[in-house]
Length: 459
Image 1 (cartoon, rainbow, N blue to C red):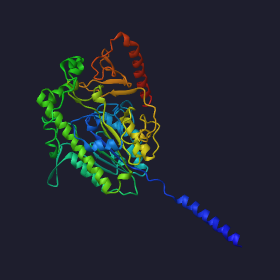
Image 2: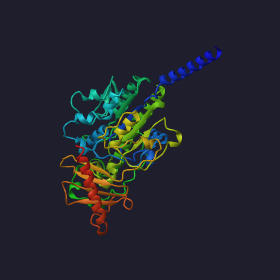
Image 3: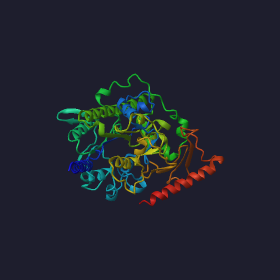
Image 4: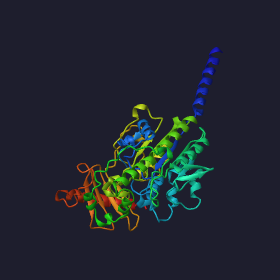
């Protein structure tokens, strides 16, 4: 009888353990905040080697996370780049840019906001939307949205507030509405440091930034010379990039004033990032909230005596990118992997973090393995494109490896460029007519053609 009772007790204990195992809660899905700045080039952060700009919160994010020094946008203009960020698709595939119809619903149904909301995430959007969608689609993507526009100075409840700070207040209000029992994904899209093109002043920053950089002297870029500018074809010398150079950089005094204004706007964003992180800590959400930070395209600061972006040179293509995952062990943080990363990688990366299946149509790659310290095979060649049909900005296509870059202009077939970026990082000595480089140029031409065909097949 005693043995029978003991056996029953053992059986009950086993069943209790089995039941406990079945009711164990799965790991909580992480919260995700995606922060996007407008026109911030890759080196406009102190942690990226800029010894003048003040960005302590971006620097902290990089030291605690992963900074990608070789981050690029596949199309260097805000409309097409933002569509690529949402969808994980090249411009040639999603076809959206300025003056084009809204992003197609079939692409939005495979975007990270739609799929995360469908999977149970509380989704939010704040700031510059930058794309067009059919009526009703904003609500299909986001539970909470505060879409904003110029001017930078707003009157709110009788108080003057800078748009960047207003975005921060909206973000903290969103976080106040969140709870630990439901994951959230918040996309914050700052207008800063985009210039107000219609204004003589161009750049507007929070008042506390007034004293920043007052005693600094901003060095001119090495390529800001007449010789480099004159090396461009007429269709670049007479483009919007040159016209806007006269708005901002055509005198030494104006150059100093404008670049400092641009830096002050970035410092304003940096301060808001710090406030958001403080709110996460206050709410007890910091330990389970991933933060992804990047810019929507690069920016010429008188490089080549040009302004804005749009072209296929490095200053236009390269952007800041940082991914911070508080769950990753300390020995894997503070890294700067050389692997090229793209704006089309944001969509699959966010989905991967959330445990949501990445659509087969995605043209990007998840960066989660890189964040986790795993070895990843990098892309050997990258396609870049700018397809907006606008007379003052030349269309362009480009293929880039870690060393070489081929640029061509579909509307100007007689002009191409080929650069050895290892020996010519400033891209001022085109090898397009160099006899010894012709076999390599032929290979890159074929590679560019093949990448274009691959993307056309995705349509």
